[in-house]
Length: 142
Image (cartoon, rainbow, N blue to C red; front, side, top):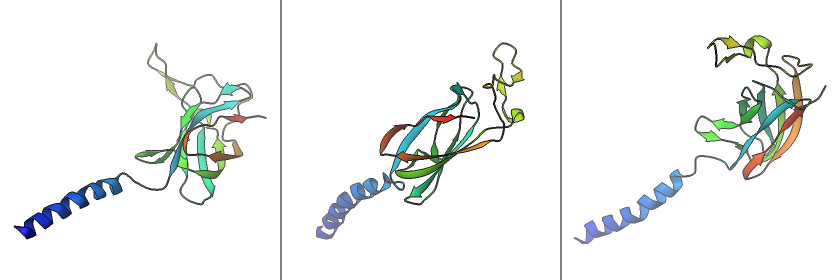
């Protein structure tokens, strides 16, 4: 019986430790969301990439929605970006990539674009991501 008790006690200690280890799925991230705008107007379907500079690592990316809002994904099951300094790139979509369903007709249409919108333009930013929630709006000016 002593062997069985020792085995049970060991299991009772190791199982919670294993569960605690499973809660960590990688490096520390900060959640990042915001709006991409062009001279103050929302930019639909812009591609946003946060590439870590310090510390180096995998990037977080997202497409903005029809209202210009984005929320970064780090991996398939984790939202956000690495905590630290990032080189941020925003690429606007070509007009044929920008299609939403018209709620009245059900047809695919191009949403209103900001005045002076230029497709496939890239803009570079530098931003800091902290632990916790980060609201980072990205304004493109031409």
